[in-house]
Image (cartoon, rainbow, N blue to C red; front, side):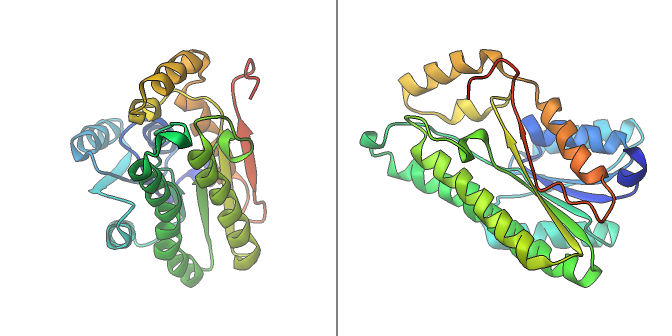
Length: 246
């Protein structure tokens, strides 16, 4: 695995915690040059410092994926620092669950903006670069919620279904030079549950997440997809706790 990851330039959105942070740590340890983006720059600064202390190559930049100009700036920054973009991991996401009857329209809008538009903004910024390079890989984070719907998660699941549809369309369009991978985690240790404003949904999710697998498990699946030879596209991985019924 290390051979195909060594030296690759990997940009990660939502890198300040959870899956994004775990992925940055693993890929940097395997020799990738990582560029970290998120809104919480204090966390990014700390993480970047830790990676550099351990001998890794890391940079960071403030990033709000709902703003197209931010994502374009993030990719431009990656090119300025390292001269190319080998992998873009569209990881940023939010999950404020609630029943539709609660009419939390602002939260619906936020999920659409982050979970769908954020991925599209990443594609818009990264695709021209990869086409010029004639190589590259998008890794888009969906969810087990992109495969089945449960109460309180209608809008969240819709956004994650959309990620799968967008990724499959992109895969079919880009031809042989660019790889597209979808990672669909089951319940995983992260801060997603903290974005739930509905008290009943938040408490249910806290109980549900007691069986969560660590973010490092998802990071390993991402590393696996990156590590494959250029002619091998790992199109989708579903990864969840062994004990999970969903």
